[in-house]
Amino acid sequence: MTSSNISGIYYCVASNKLGIEKRSIRFYITDMQSSLEANSQMTAIVTSHVQMTCKCSKYLYDQLTWYDPTLQEVPTSLTQEKVDNYTISLVLNIHNVSQAHAGLYKCRASSYHNRTKQLEKSTMLSIKFKTVPYIMQNFTDLEVNVSGTIVLECKVNGIPKPAIAWLKNGHRIAPASGISMENNTLVIERVKKDDEGHYECQAINEMGQDSTRAFIKIEGSEEKSNIEVIILVCTGLAATLFWLLLTLFIRKLRK
Image (tube, rainbow, N blue to C red; front, side, top):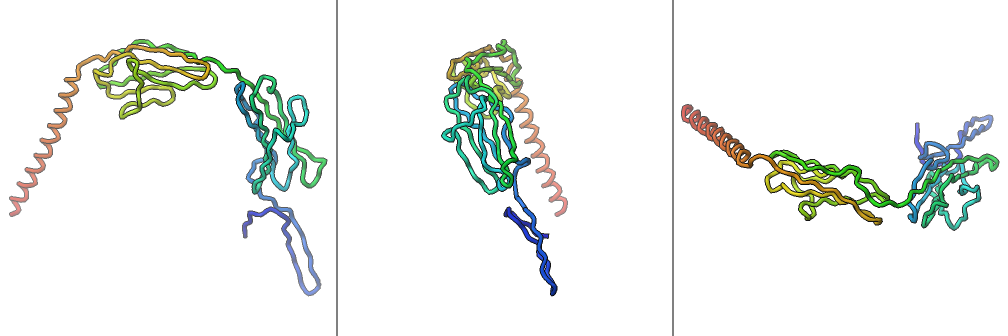
């Protein structure tokens, strides 16, 4: 058993004193699951740039061609071919996308060994218009106990996807120990009295912004929490001192 990473025609040769017999087999290496591949659906935003890629298995198919929704062949000035070890790709570039570009695009490839044989894949291009961000659920005022956790989820929509900023009393919140801001959710752990205040989520994109805010009230006293910490520390020190005295006592008995 041997291995190869080179496509081509491989021969098996058998010979003896009476002659030679030879058989051949076409052997092709590919990194594709099928001979022709393209995304079935793509979405682009108005005025953006979109790339649609079609690729075929090298040595089996070539002459890749894109066709627009009117079944007209796409000009070569809008496409770019790339040849890799195992595949041939044809990228269709559409700049300054508009609603007129929406529709079903087709990619065709011809068999390398039989030009009458063709494969075809389709890509449906959908166009979305830009929209102002909007908060889907406004915050409500909350009460959180000392040492509890603040969790605020900012549910927002908009095109392009809005960026999220978190503010407390008008000042931007930065990630820190015990403070995370992932997946549009603000989480503050082990809250203290000075975490009380007005919290705001701002959603911003090039079309505008939206925001929602709430007042977070911290209930309870930090003194209790501090006493608990002191008790834990003292308990730890007492245990350490006990084991130290016990160790010294055992050593003294051995002497």
